[in-house]
Image (cartoon, rainbow over all chains, first blue to last red):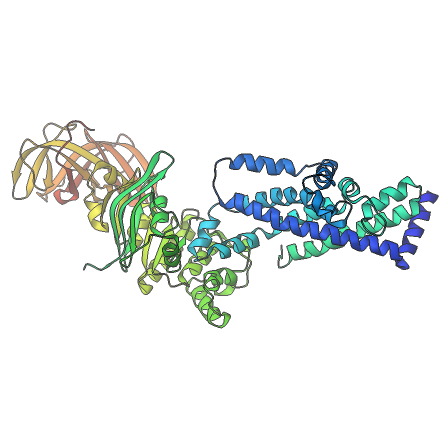
Length: 232
Length: 372
């Protein structure tokens, strides 16, 4: 028990004194996962819309693949992205392995199928006649897309939350493609792993609390957006 | 009065996979009229309506709106801003009644200052004035469909398409809504196309009827014309002409003829108004509301058909009762609750069914030997 209390005390101290290193790690986590989620929203929602609004041969296969992608193990993504970005790999010339950009890339690969899969389900769950109704009200193509997204905003924001939750808490890929380099690619999860393995439980606890608070805050904002204007 | 055609369809064909689901050689929608598309489920009413509304590009054929062909997607998009459609489900957005009604105006870039009074006006005309701020998910079925209608009428559409807009409502709500819709259509002179499988609704709203079967229009014409002079047994059954009789013409005189029924009493002939040749086999129909029941033969009118028969079934039909009779042939009649008890109608009861010669409608003269 002492270990936990000591951890809590230390965590509170690190938080209250705004330890420079902890602050840098926190901001980097937020930035990396935020950008990755943003990319995934663009790619994932784009994919979801393309699949939901069009009929084409192999549509079911695409949906099945997207849904499978929702369960991609981060370490597999980490391995794949590492090989791609390796010095003499296909994208080695970019020279971004062991940089935050590599973590963003890996996290985007993890979150895109999650947002695409849940987003597609959200769009397909809309009443089947809604698209025709919107067109019959005189909507142009972009207006149609906007109204559909607006109508599905509740489950779509849930999809965004799931995507963000998936990457902010992910550690395997981040450590593999980022390397947990101090001052450059160390994020909350990789730092927690390192501190725990070193036996620095108090610091690890502090980082974990911050991670939880971060996840809670971001989701609180998204939940507020989601539930806005609903009275029941 | 013949009015200009506002929408013309020529040689419309829609295929779904390898199946031809719609084939309409020609259909004109006249300015200011309400045209009802009637037919059973799967007859192609909705497909025709979506095609006419430019929401479903036909596989082949041409659509002209006010003389201009709708060919490209751009044409159809422009057309979509001049018509609108109300579906069976209200399909409201997750927003308030006022926001829902304003949607189409907003899509057209109408300013809020201009939107607000128009939204209020139409909400009031459809009895929604007190519900403007209510979220759509708190509305009853009737209120939701009224909101959908207000959302359509506020756009002042040149054509309003109504795809079974009352089907999901209970009878009482439906009555009020049909009444209001009829009044608004008349007041605004809106050109409308109404798909329905119910003849009663069509009769109350439409000027013309097009009866559909298996993707084709089998008969189109004025409401009374189609209801009273169906061209074939399918249309007859669909417009409520439940008794269809086949017989051979015995005599013809002065626009009347007498008919020996193929299945029926051999000592009595049926009087029909119409033209045919003696010896010809013809098909006639009788509407149940034109048949009167009594306990004895009424001889006051010569132009009257009277057949004794036995009641086989009594079926409640709203405020009326439908009586099925065996007069040697099958006959149906509508009676009031009062007649039901006065005549003590019940299965087995012997009555006389009578109807005027003018109530017998000549449906077809040829091609009968192979059918029925």
